[in-house]
Amino acid sequence: MRSLMNPYLTLSLLFLILVFPQSVKANSWIQSKGNKAPSLSVEQSLWGMIGLPLGGKEWSLEQKIENIAKAGFDSIQGNVTSVEEAQKLAKLAKAKGLTLTLRASIKSQEELLKAIKVVKASGARGLIVEIKKTFASLEQGQLMIEYLIRECKKAGVAYYLDIHRNSLTQDLGKVATWAREVKGIQFDADLSHLVSAYDLGWKLSPQMAQAFDLILGKAGMVDGRISNGQQLQIDIGPKGDHPQAKRFQAWWKKAMVNWLKTAGNEDVFVFRSELGPPPYSITDLKGKEISDRWAQAQVLRNIAIRTWNEAVKEAGKGLAYSKKKPKSSKMDLTVKKSPILTIRGVSNRVGDFYLAGQPAQPDLEKAVKELGVKTVINLRKDVELFGLGFEEDYTIELLKAKYIHLQTGPMVIDDELCEKFLEACRKAPRPILIHGSNGNRVWGMWALYLAMDHGVSIDDTKAQATKLGVKKLVVEDYVRKYVAKQK
Image 1 (tube, rainbow, N blue to C red):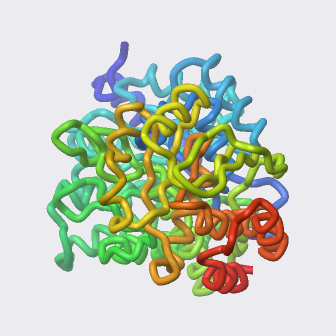
Image 2: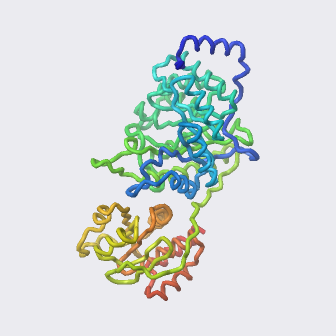
C-alpha cells in the first residue's frame, strides 16, 4: 500500500502540478439540481446516533434514519465501509426523503481511491475526508491535499477536508497556510477540535483570529459541535443560549456569508450535527451520559437554520431556509379503555399513549413488563411524591424503561416545559405512559400535543375529556396561549 508521503508519489504529484495546473479549478460543492439560489442542507451524523435514545434501548439503523427524517433533517452522514453498505444507507435515506454524505479516514492513496469509488457507486452526494498524517510537513501536506482535490474533481465527487485532531489538519498554522495557498481547497470546519486543542476558551489572539478567518473563508461545511476550550463537546441548553453557542454561531455565520459570496445557484452549504457518543460525550461515574445528545442535535439544527437565514439576509444572496416541522406519523386518535389501574382518576389509551392518573408501583411494573411501555412521563410536582410509598424514577430505571419527570401545574408551566413535553411525545420510545395524580393535567398537556401535532382543537379535546370524566384541563389557559402563539 502506497503511503500519501511516499517520495515517488511526491515526485509524481509535482509532475502533475507542473504539467496539468489547469486541473485544479474553482470549488465544486455539493449541489441541489434545479435550485435557483444557493441553499442550506442540515445533516445528522449516524455516528452521533450511537446509543440513542438516552435511557432506552438503542434504535435500529432504520429507526435512527426514520427519526432523523421526522426531526426535519435533510441528510444523513455515514462512514465509508463497502459499496454494499453505502448502497444500503443510500436506499434507506432515499426512502425517508433524505440524501447521503459519506466520510472516510484515510492513510494512503489506495484508501482515498476506494472512498471515491464507494461514493460514486452508492450515489452519495459528497465525501468528507480526514487525512491521518499528523506529522506531515507543510510541503508534504500541501501535496496530499492537492492530490485529494485532483482525484475528487476527476471523479466528479464533491469533497470536504475535515479539520480534526490527530490528523493532517490539527496544526492551525499549517491549515491557515494551506487555506491561503492551495487553490480549490474546501473545508469541513469542525472548529470544536481547534478550540479544544488550543485551549481557546474565550477571546482569540489576533494571530489566531486571522487563522480562523482564513479557514472560514474556505469552508463549505461546518460541524455542529461546541467546545468551551476544555471539553470538546458541551451541552448548550434546551434553547441553545449558552455563551459558547453564541460564539460558535458567529463563526458559522461568517463561514456562510463568505461562502455565499461565490456560491452558484445550485450549490449547497452543509451544516452537520455530529455530537459523539461516549467518550466524546460527558458521563457520570457509572458511564451514563449527562446530556441528551438527540435533543441537543435538534437544538443545533434550529441554530443552523436561524444562522443561515441571517447570513442570507446579510449577504443579499441565497435561498432562505423554511424550517420544516418535525414530521409526526399518523396515529389513530380513538380513545380506548386502558388496562392500567390507577390510585385515582381516569386511565385511557390513545394510539401509542396511555393517559392516566397515578398508578401504584405494581401497576407501573405491569405496564412496562406486560404492556410494553417504554417511556413514563410523570407530570406531578416533587412535593406531591413524598407520600407515594415508592421511588418512581428508581422503579422505572430498574425496569430499563425511560423516565421523564416534567413538573407541571397552573403555576409551574412555561414555554420551555411545553417544548420539552412535545419533544418527549415526538421522540421518546413508545408506547408512552403519561400520568399525573388524577388525569386532569395529563389531558391538559395532551390537548397541547394534539393541537400542535395533529391539528385537533383544544375545545374538541376538552369535550372528549369531559365525557371521560375529566373534571378540568388544569393547564388549559397556558396551553391555549402557547398554541395561539405558535400558530
